[in-house]
Length: 445
Image (tube, rainbow, N blue to C red; front, top):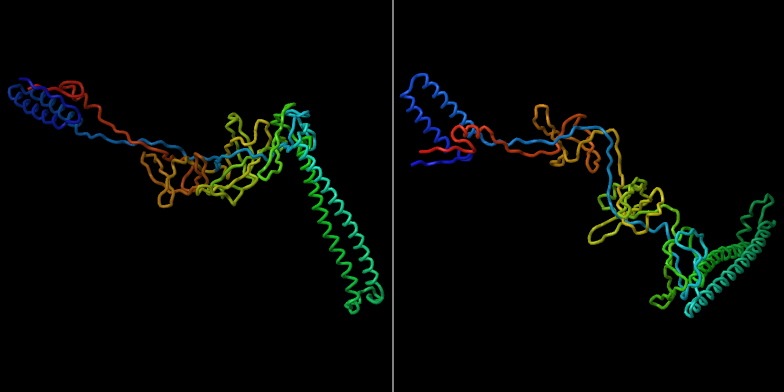
C-alpha cells in the first residue's frame, strides 16, 4: 500500500523527519555498492540534506524599508487658514418708506449715480401721502428750531461782546490798573470788579452753550430731512456708486411697511456699490489669533470663483471675541488689494493669512519631525544603512515643511516614513522539486 504525504513550508519538521529516514535508507543502499558510487551518493545525499535544512530552518525575516528626504535650504512660510464671508462695507442700500405705484424709474442696474441723484418716482397712495406730510411737518419744525437756536446764538454773542467791552473798560481804568499797565491786584479784589468780570464770563458761558444747541438743531434738521426723503414721492441715491439689484418696474406697487409700534419703516429697493475694494470678515480661533498681526498678507479664494485667487491684508482684529457653544472666536477683517465686480456681498470665502516667512533656512518635511518629553528629534539614515535619532530645534512650519534651527546639516538624509516587509527564501521551492516538485514533495511508502 502506498501512502502519499504532501508537505508545505509551514511543516518543515515533518519534512526533516522524512529526510532522516531517506538518509538511513541510503546508507543501507550504500553497503552493496562500489566505493565510487558510494562517494557519489554520499555527496548527493549530504547536499540535498544541507540544502533542505537551510531552506526550512531559515525563518521569515522582516526587513524595514524607509521613505527619506534630504535636508534642503529654501523659503518657508507659516500661515493660518480660516473661512468667512464678504462684508457689505463697500455698499449700501437704496430704501424708501413711501407706499404707492412706481410712476418713473431714472436708473437701471449698472448705472453710476451720485449721492442725491433720483432713482425713482412714486405716485403715493393715501397712507403714503399722510406719512409724507407728517415727515415734511417734522422737517419744517426742525428747520424752525434751528433758526430759533441760531437767533439766540447771535443774541448771546452780542450780549457777550457788550459785557466783554464793559469789563475791559473797567479793568483798564486807573482804579484797577497801575500806571505801567499791570493789574492792580488789590483793587481787583473788590466786589464791584468781580461783578463786572462775572457778568462777562456768564454771557460767554451761555454763548458757548448755545453753540452746542445749534449743532444739535443742525443734526435734528438733517435727520428730519432724511426722514422726509424716505417718505417723499422721490427715491434718492444715498451715496455715490453703481446701482445693483434694482427690481422695480413702472406700475409696480410698493406696500407700506410698519414696525411693532405702528411707525413707518423702510424697505430696500436697490443697492449702491462703491469702488472701494471689498472686505472679508473671517473668524480666528483662540490659538491662531495671537499669531495674526495687522498688515499680515493674505490670499483669498471663493467657492463661486474657483479659478481666481485674490490678495489682501489684515486691517483689523477684534480681540474681544465672541463665545458660541463654548467655542471662542475672534473676528478679523481682510481688505482685498483690488476691487472685482464679480465679488458680491455675503459670498463665502476661504482665506490663508501669512503670519511669518523665513528665507534661506534649513527645512525638512513635517512628517520627519517627532517629539518626546517636550523635545524634538528626527531619524537620520546613515551611509551604512542604519537609522539614528538626532535631536533638533525647530522654527516655523508650513503645511508640509518645518524649519530646522540646529541639529542637522544640508544634505543629511532624514526618514519621513517606514514600513516592514516580510521576505521568505525562494530556494525552498527548488529543494522540494528534487523530490516531487511544486510547493511540497510527495513520498510513497
